[in-house]
Length: 268
Image (cartoon, rainbow, N blue to C red; front, side, top):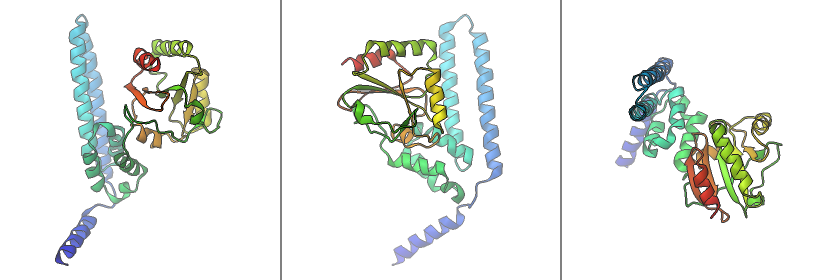
């Protein structure tokens, strides 16, 4: 009984100590610190480009060092200011780079208004969900196509599927040419190219189809921020690509589009 009372009292103290609302001042502090980080990143990048203009190898090494520092500092700031709306959103964006134990600790210390936010719920769902990785079975998600019809995954169950999380624009022209060449090399009955976009409306999805190609199938949950697809498939960077074989197994996952690797795994 004493132990029960002790635990109850501890819980009550925690609830009383936890703030009800996030601090607007801390929110602004984070916004300022984040702006400074990326402004300094840009300035340093320009300085390095000028300093090592004729030393390509040295420039590459310095650029990697700068990016590594910026990524580390970005994560540190997000965790430090996780009790603010912007900091918590950044934690969600960086959730794949933050240990789930750390994310759980962040949730436990949130002000009560943020604990009820959609972002906090999405992080909690991420923690509870095993993310799709190579060797795991494909997990169909309820989505619609660019015509507003429910996308039927079973229609493609005997094909290889190249599932791309957005980013056709990020591929550049060369990447899109390689994707088009892949489409030409493999018949539609052997390969389905499915492109997921985080958009809010069918009209936006149609715009992507019109902009790029109707040779691919464009799909979405129409939930841009905290969708089940993003959480289940552990995606944030675009494009993130998955090759799913005829048995429904994930055989390749790449951040960025690697045409040669995709071709090898599709051809097996």
